Length: 457
Ligand code: UD1
Ligand code: CA
Image (cartoon, rainbow, N blue to C red; front, top):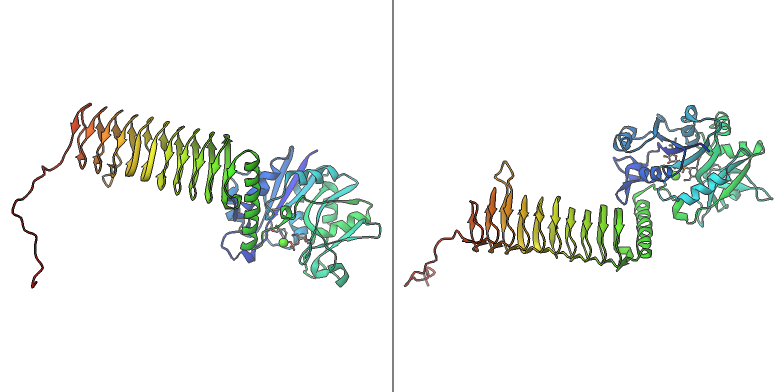
């Protein structure tokens, strides 16, 4: 079966009140249209056609490089039927045409597959849903024998028809030749003066084609995004689904309603515990027995076994070796690589640096553009001065070095293996292995010195 999937995405999305075209708004950091594209992409032997209109340039610019589709511009939005008409030149008679909406992001593959099972030269497959409040939707009109005979749009519906609770989701599958023929017969003599795709249902029935309906597993699957409230609502639905999936995989989520995954967990160990308000973004992999404390944000990271990340950390493009501990209040910036059993404590910032096994940077430090050896202890308040205002330079710290508190390491500089740096030093030259180096004014005490006294007292 050769499939042509048409994704309708030309609509304006006025109620979003946004400069951004509606289908570029995100759910879980991914544009609505990308959700629909990713779903379509899971079908074999499928050519994808996307109809764009409002903000067409921006939509294409944002997504063209990652989408393998044919983009079609619908210059004027004259209705859903008119939108599908734009694709006619690309539809073969024997194609199975699947019609999806670019602003309906949570549709499931199983639901689409049912439509593809139902469609044939003798049947048009239509996805419908029953709503307590059907207002705004096209209603599914059935005859006494419960056969679908037409869809009537809300604005054209009689009082009686408006009471029908089964509505059109807009999603359907139909054979290409039939679709093209019916599209050619559409008229816009209706309440909205639009070419309604839904009018093809009556045409199909007139030709003895049966309308086979199926329903999604949940209503949310077919909900469209028209405003920011619906966007937020579907974000929650999506996050809840992801949370349930992770829990089923054995992850403990302290509160699934306060967890956000905006990307993909590529590899997942056993007995992971994630506390509240953790946000995972991009590509993440997490080993066994990892604990992540509350209020932590992690983007693109590889986290080894037995790692503990305490509360309120911000981690991006980092590798955290097994047994390491990070935080609370630590920031690991891009290209941070921690080997096994490294300790990074509170108010420590690390950037573009590798920290070898069992080294500790426990308090209030900035380590940037550095290679830190193994079993190094970096005291509180240590700063790698990596930037002279124009260029960045590297700091190299040998294995077993001990850096006293409140030390500035002026890069480029190398600290020898097992070297000790006295607290409060400003190190501008390389220091030898095994020796104590310090740069510190000699301490003196002034005998007989008097404290100043406030004038007039
Ligand atoms: C449509 C259906 C209605 C159904 C409802 C489900 C028709 C005539 N009506 O109504 O039966 O209950 O969807 O949400 O089909 N679009 C274009 N070009 C256009 C018009 C629309 O690309 O000229 C796209 C929109 O971007 C959107 C989709 O088609 O993704 C649906 O358009 P919308 O205006 O929301 O359709 P409704 O009038 O709500
Ligand atoms: Ca709509």
